[in-house]
Image (cartoon, rainbow, N blue to C red):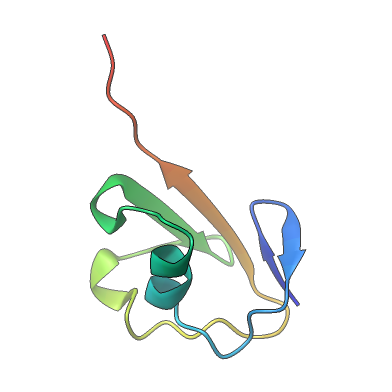
Length: 64
């Protein structure tokens, strides 16, 4: 299982980019932390989620 924002998912062998796209995230407006480290956007396509990973996804929103 992979823990994403506190919830466990069966997502092993999926890339971060695949997960984000499938769940409606705008890659330009999120930051991803993988196992305690900020993941550069350039690595979203190659970062493969693995059993036991912990991911935090933060979406940026505009406002005034």
